[in-house]
Length: 174
Image 1 (cartoon, rainbow, N blue to C red):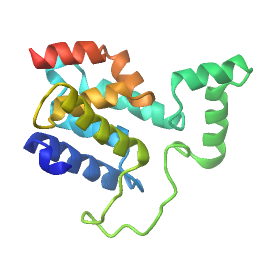
Image 2 (cartoon, rainbow, N blue to C red):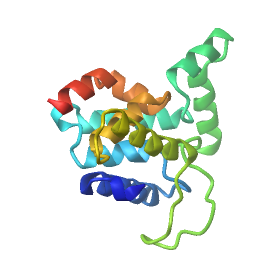
Image 3 (cartoon, rainbow, N blue to C red):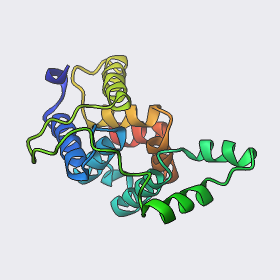
């Protein structure tokens, strides 16, 4: 599938793996794909503040990756997610929910980090989007649109910063 990716899109995917390695993550997630898009300036033309998006992603990670919809559903049951996260962090340290348990020893910058199911689905979705638009190659636009099309913290953070599927498609294809 990667032979259909543009050089920029390939660089984004390898950058996501580097983001995962740097974070000590056991897998490459959708969040790492977004961080790589941010680092490459893909969202700059949409007026996105890279620092603010990264901070909001970190806040979502602090919530254990739960979306606001999840948080609202728990609140409807009388469960305060913020309070739970605070208590866990009091006991286990700040970011305890954000740090995945190591899967294997880190062997340095060259170690292979597999893609999580969600990031695999996003890559597959980028192919579907490219095919649906009759584009021959998969570019960073397709990766961004794929991330926006999937429910979860990444698309919520993007939407909070004014990056919606229709807005991104219209602005980036103009």
